[in-house]
Length: 322
Length: 304
Image (cartoon, rainbow over all chains, first blue to last red; front, side, top):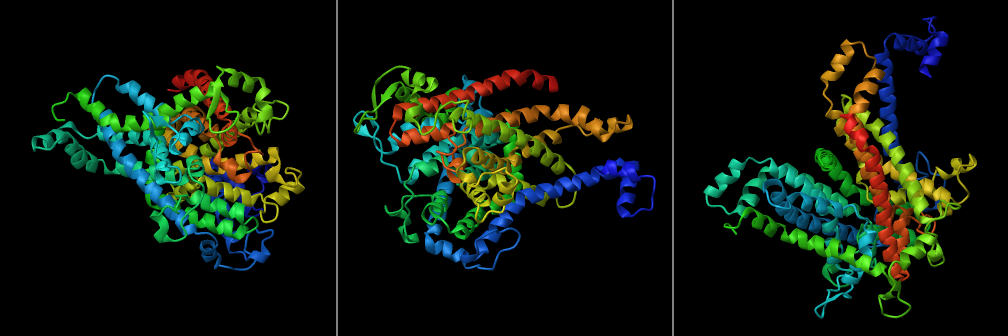
């Protein structure tokens, strides 16, 4: 469009700032590219951030004015962020989610460290096919595991006369699938990092009398701290965002108070069920749905601001080095 | 433990991982396959009926089983209401847009400018948002009473009066939601490809008098193509499993993706059918991936 205008008026130099700018942009294309860059930048910032801003506008709009909300709220009702917790025990859902994410991350980091050490530093028969098999598992749709896993976690699978544990509505039924699902990426990231630690450092630790495992946890792992942090952050976000098993491996019930969180009345329903509770039980309370969503986003938003370098390097390493 | 050979030590350390993946992934896959060879339980406590070989697969593929499913498995006449077609439409359209937008975002992030750190945070942010909240956001945006997007699009004739319960409209909304969230993932993978390009190539091109467009066409694009192809493959695999977003925005009866169909027939205790559907889902993904790899393996090796 800019060039078109330029052709019509390009010759007459003193016709106003826009025409002048177009004229100079034709003589110097770098200027036009710069302008294009800023247009694209503003466009991307607007499309990614505006929906979130709008969610905030919707949240603080009072109940009776919930219509045609666009740029500014029709009224101002910050109390909505307290109402969210009074309507459903949203803090318990959040806490369940955070606990599930922390437990899964701990298990994944421990097991993936062992596997990362093996794949990054040891040569043994079957190494490549085994690595490939582990990666292949993460490409199956979660739906392919649903039918047997549900039977397993509801105590309906018997091995040698012993029934499987009834883990439905407990952390186990979610932490186990999460760990299996998100383990491959962490193994991959950690084996890359552990493989880069010089052989000599491990040998030195061994000469000092450390065991092999001691060398892994006291020398290799601390030296690969950025890699461990990357795997940890990505696993945490993945679990916090997971839908499939979070939705199907519990019945959506939670304890009514913080103290009840370890009792059997807490069915470990995560954030997801808390958000959906507003949609299913309070059909027209759109401002509460928006407020709950904003509160739910906060932990990951903070994590993205703090750890964006780790996220970027982890995602690209996981995908491009295969 | 210290005296074991490398191989024995390796397998010892791998035991917990293999045990976990064995119980949570490998055994369920085999069990799903075994169940898929059995009839649905007619009644009561049984998980499945008698062994019937590949009859479930035949019935699903030939359309005979459609009557027992919430929506048909495959139907060209109603592409937005049958599982295979709507899943492929969703995957193809959303990945195409994500590639374009992701490429644009990557080109922006590749520039040097002040505040780049914060722009990067803003662009990654949607990727980190939980699926349920992404779904809720777009459910609200297109909710006719509160959302500002439904009204104008309806008056343009692009959306029906209740977009969230119309199969075609809801599919479009879900595609928009997916593009919003996952373009950033594409952008990061493509950005990594961009940053691995040797910058001196551009200096040479500039000395030779190449315009910016020529630099893009003859240097940037061919060198970044392998990363783009891999990113597209990753995203397509993920897109074909879509479930949570649909469940939150419109519900599985409105937009019946393949994973949706598995979960709904599982919910109706049709375990044989659900297992066969789950395997067919994996099969559809496997076929698309193989075709893609065969089709683009040449392009990729030619890129370097």
